[in-house]
Figure 1 (cartoon, rainbow, N blue to C red):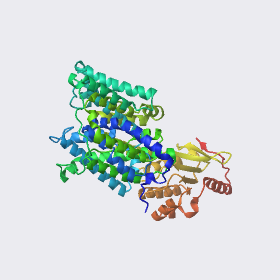
Figure 2: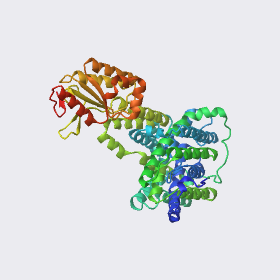
Figure 3: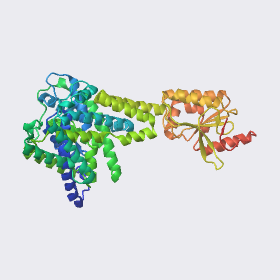
Figure 4: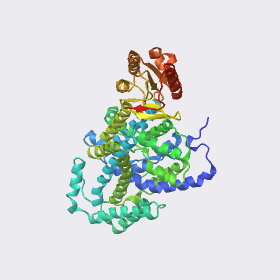
Length: 570
């Protein structure tokens, strides 16, 4: 039995130094980043550090991805905060012990749901959020995240109510800006952007934290109206179930945990797959779900909130030439040491510094290039992305996830309901030509070869039949052959099988022959089980388009007809 974790199998000694350096660099980026995510999740700062200790360790042992970095994430943190706020339970307020207990419980339930997803092999769920929907969703999260940091950047109280009310509150409170707070927040943004622009190998966030926290301590900024983090209780992560909760509380966090689970599968699968393909590695999404479920359970049992695969931190690890999860284990070890011995250094850190870090994280989530590409190339999908984004920041993140799933499924149904359909002809060289399937189009005089680029099922069967009937009835010449190109039809449900049998009867009533072209063995077996193949006839099956055209021409020649060599359209 091989006890070596899958991501570490085949490890080469030459990778060791690079993995350790990559892990050290990653920890310098991840420490301020995950502390910033706690302002989104509404949990104590130290809980952000906890998300990249045991959850990272468990994923490294159980997952399959060599590079995927697991830890706190802005999107899942926003979903968590929105869900817990929606509970409306007295005492469950951001930063309170009860809030943290419910956050940990959500992580445990999320881990359980991911286990169920793995047992049912539901890794494909990640494929049901289209790229346009994900662009819109993450853009909406980015707008919500960055706008939520503006009050802390300005040093003014946060407003109540919905998103628009909160924005109006800070806009009308600009006269109350704290100059010192704003200076620290602005300096954070400038430092990070300058390092990103001119010295990208140095993590600007860690430079901003160290430099501005030192300035704050020397100037005693906390005594001059600048809000600081204050004492941070470090130490080893607490191990155990969240206290003060019961089994009845599981149902309260179930919707939030379900939303997080869908997002985790979708985002982590996309990240893991993209980096695996880049390096020629195998992809095992279901195995990654095992690692992600273990990571969420570890988060819930170590006093922190739900974790996710991080595209930004994974990109950093890849840029630093990390090879395996050993780099992530190095990061976890560094963070554990920091949590045990150095959290006291954070006491004088201005809250505006964290707000500046998170503000830029929100900016990075707004995918303007992706939206521009959709606008230029696919306007209808741009509208879908825009609707999703507005729903996320204006209505709620959970509602945005529900809408994202619904829109993705509706898009899938739309594509199956209205696929491409063509009438296929042949040019002088005998190569197939494709014309839009419009009434009056035919392949040859008396021949219609119809291609429908989708599987046939109950929802699109009648549209398929209506389309083919309109082509047959409007053909310039009396139709003697109707050929269905099955190259894109792998399966057919019973309702569509009945519709197809009716089409066979329709063509025969018009004294025409109905044939199948390029059906695979699975489709033939299904049609045989329905009895539809008996109605069509085994002799009316052709393996290629060329065979069907040749057979039709041969039959037409015997009948004394001079068929034209190419497609015709009235």
